[in-house]
Each structure stands twice: as C-alpha cells, then as structure tokens.
Length: 282
Ligand SMILES: Cc1cc2nc3c(=O)[nH]c(=O)nc-3n(C[C@H](O)[C@H](O)[C@H](O)COP(=O)(O)OP(=O)(O)OC[C@H]3O[C@@H](n4cnc5c(N)ncnc54)[C@H](O)[C@@H]3O)c2cc1C
Ligand code: FES
Image (cartoon, rainbow, N blue to C red; front, side, top):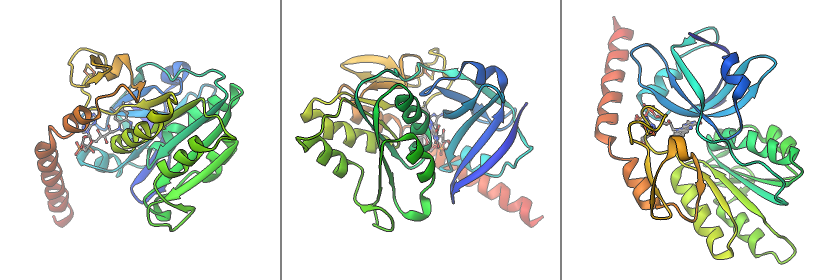
C-alpha cells in the first residue's frame, strides 16, 4: 500500500497527492508517468509525475476529477493509501540546453509541465511558461511556475485573471516577434490544446513536444491500448512516449480513440454515483 502523505486541493476538482514511494522516487524523471489504482479491485489509471523528492522518498501527481476513478480518488484523504503505484513508466522528457523553451500547461497539465520547466531552467534555458485555465477559480501554482520560469503568462478563457485568451494567442505572438527566437515548445494538457499548440508552431517550424494521453491499460507495451500514429508509424505511447513530436501526431485518430469507451465510462460513473448515493442514504 502507498500512503498519501499530503493532499493539496489545487482547484475545486484538481488535487495533488504526495505519495510515500521511495523506490519510484529514486528513479523518477520529468515527463514520466505512473499507473495507479485506488483499491485492489479498482481501475488502473495513468497519471504523470508532477514532482518527486528523492531524499524524502515521495512522488507527487495532480489529477482532475473527470470520471468514476478520479472522482473516487478525490474522496481519499491524507493518511489513506493507494493499492497500486507503479512507475516511473515511459521515456523521460529530453532535458538539455536548447536556448528559449516555451512550456505550455493547460488545466491539470500545468502541474505536470512544472517539473519540466524547472529542469529546463536548471539546464540553462530561458524558460517562458504559458499557463491556461478556463477561469481564475480553477487556477493554481502561479507562484511555483513563476519561480521555475524566466517569464510567465497566465491566460483564462473568461478573462477572470491574466489575459483573456487561449494559450495559443500569446504563443503565436512570440513566434511572430522578430526580436525573439523560440527553440522548443513543450505542451501538456488536454489533447485538443496540444493539437492546437502544434498547429500554431508548425508553420514556424518550431520543434514541439507533446505528452500524449491516450487510453492506457498495462502501461508496459503489452496490450496495444495506447496505440497512436506518429509520422505515419504506429507507436505505443506508454513505452515509445508519452512525449512525441506534435507536428507528426495524427490528432484526429488520438481524439477519436480517446472516446472509444465513452458509453462504458458514463455507465460506470452513473452506477458508482448511484451506489454512493444509496450508501449515503442508508
Ligand atoms: C500518460 C498519461 C498521463 C496522464 N496524466 C494525467 C495527469 O497527470 N492528471 C490527470 O488528471 N489526468 C492524466 N491523464 C488522464 C487520466 O488517466 C484520465 O483522466 C483517467 O484515466 C480518467 O479515469 P476516470 O475513470 O476518472 O474517467 P473516465 O470516465 O474513465 O474517463 C474520462 C476520460 O479519461 C480518459 N481515460 C479513461 N480511462 C483512461 C485510461 N485508462 N488511460 C488514459 N485515459 C483514460 C478518456 O479519454 C475519457 O474520456 C493521463 C493519461 C495518460 C495516458
Ligand atoms: S498501455 Fe498497453 S501497450 Fe501501452
């Protein structure tokens, strides 16, 4: 069992758990992910490593409540335990001195892009972070990202904080600015955001790394659930990624494959809510 040593509520439906997992902490690198189960009979879900502390033997992840398993996880408290905590999985993000690196985080992706921003800064890059949220009430980690970044831009869809725009607008302005050179863009967040970041950078030929989030089962390259198409070749995101060249990703296939279990996911959530409601009323 893996104890939750700290829980932080980042936004109403986004939480950060710090887990006691020394063996995972020892090897964790920015960009890698975990497979987690709430309980022995729970569903296995992949979550990106948001931070790690080798000395304390802890690993953190941030998750957004979207369906049955993440909502169930949202009920866990400090001191509770997770049944499964496997990792680090996947290839680490390639960290080196590129020059100017723009890190784009959308929603929960802001937490997962943060260790990459920190590592890129430590490697000597000029790091510009763009954090995008739907609204100020969903925003978190502005101070933390400011520490890890040379420049920070916050956007909200509704204009309640920072600049009223989507993340691609300030990014496009930077790419168009003759006084600037952007050497790499790293984007993490919803697939649709990563798609549009990639479409924005493509005409400028700016290398763009995205962290793909297809459906995953085993996370070790055995089941094929995480199949994606990159540069016309089939790749397994869990072992070949999750980082890929955003200009080479078949986004339509990824977005379609993310929806293949949508009816089952809806049903699972309804059944769980119904059971939770019965338990509350009994
Ligand atoms: C490599 C990777 C890293 C991820 N990192 C994070 C993270 O750091 N924080 C975070 O909040 N979310 C992350 N996700 C997404 C997270 O795994 C899903 O939100 C979670 O599995 C949803 O489970 P659910 O039962 O709550 O919702 P469901 O109702 O089952 O699903 C909601 C949505 O999540 C996606 N999903 C469902 N099951 C899986 C699965 N087994 N694998 C991948 N996606 C699934 C589906 O596209 C679906 O539309 C990551 C996904 C991948 C592949
Ligand atoms: S999750 Fe099974 S092959 Fe990647």
